[in-house]
Length: 342
Image 1 (tube, helix red, strand yellow):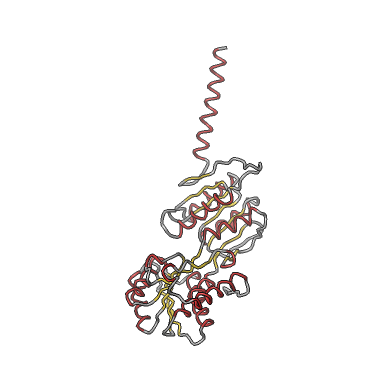
Image 2 (cartoon, helix red, strand yellow; image 1 turned 30 degrees about the vertical axis):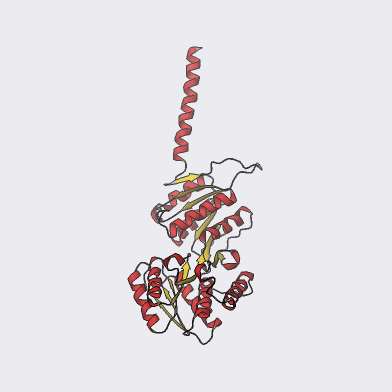
């Protein structure tokens, strides 16, 4: 009997050890997971959502935005979540298949570079949805993509710039020559000219998202040509445009995030791209079985693009200008005004 009891205890110990090892290795993610897989109060198992990012989630930029989206999905949709950071395209297949094998319902690749590998893997896991951010790739029945309407964002920035301008000249500077940036600059020109047909719009592309000095130099040259409102959509380099506007005593319109803190007396408002909200909206559609294998383009009407507060300009702007800005927002929000990306 003693031997049997010892054998039984040893067996239990071995099972526990195996469970610990499986738990430690099962996530296949380089950084962590959250939400243990428990059932909700309604008895339904939570949606399982995994994220791959090409860089570190603490970069205060593109990758951090994706992680914020994952946390929003966890908190607002009650999902069980996991993530892997700094996943290059050569390693992506291993991580994607690992999450699919672990029963994740949605696997998100944060960047168009994950599109091809997801397209290859998706047919092997038809019960899993594969979502590629910043892309337009699709494949029946379970591969979709998410992008924000950058041209609509630019349209709103251009409309505001035209309303703010007293000189009749405004400027839009883009960073890298990629569609999200070039579309925002094109949208800026469209919005400005639809608001004030006679306005002069100066535009250019820097070819870089990191060259703050070049952005500042370019913005100063536009200001010297008469621009009294400047928008620079170039990630880190965008700060150069704000510095130039601040130095020359003209206004700036912020892009992608609330940039007022970079120039409280210069940045009138910003037009924010909310990728976390966009990610939540798309995953919620999947959760509610409303998703089709079609690219998801989100904008103002989805709450994924919106105006930051006017901050210190709240009392400086006339009610007439604020009403006109709000009118543009409402037209986009209602869908009465549609800005095509084509």
